[in-house]
Image 1 (cartoon, rainbow, N blue to C red):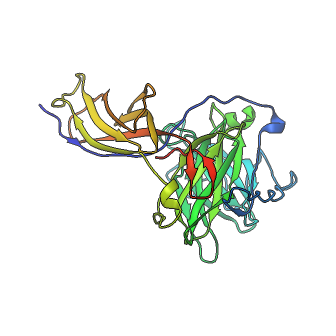
Image 2 (cartoon, one colour):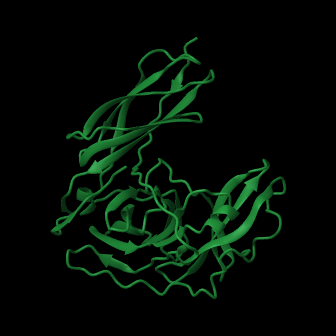
Image 3 (cartoon, rainbow, N blue to C red):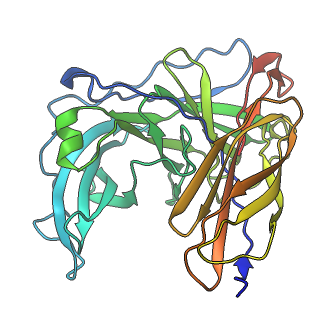
Length: 340
């Protein structure tokens, strides 16, 4: 019997590289700075002083509201909460990154919370995995009266710096995010994670537009961009430098059948450069393909998609846009952008 397919498009950036382990002294890296305009000659403000080692209780249990049992009575901690990193936001607020495993199964699911020791507030539950398989994502946005909007997400272990870019009153601006790199093997083992990863918190004015989080490696190369939801689109300079790849015409090449080869075809477009890779997810199955570099921002892509049950199945398509260098935002600054 043919299997009906619920069509869906998902647009995100991705760019993959391998990271490496380092010793305990390098287990935590924190970067934070104030906002700066993106003029070509505008120097970045020096980072705020990172939290002292006396305050950061790496590997220890966090303070309230954490206790021996989770607030959800039906769940259990499979790995108890511990502090795996500390940082300081550009606004000056100190935070702890708390990791634990929670669930009914023996392994449980990983949760990464942001905990503010001074106020006792905490929020989560984040992940060590980058959605879309790239270098960075932007999966959380929190707002509070009288405070900047906070954007959170995960990075791969090789990312060394995250910068928030946003449009404010028609001008593009930037601020350094607080990035916590978790690379110590003991800390990773304590929360049941194998590979190093990063988690970042960035702050932008509440009325910002065209917000993005840019990830750079140790050489300063742009390796990925994440776009948080909940912000308006650009109306000024951001119209030039805020572009995303698009997926359209998603369809199966033949009637779907369970247990037999099925393929999906779609069109990926990225006017700012070229399409570098694509992923197709159906249920729990994931198919990834790195594409040959070809000039032109439009590709028709065909990939296999496994279907193992009857019913309506959502198909999630992710593409990577690889940028060309261009004059950005009318400020005489050459830059590259990975869109999603």
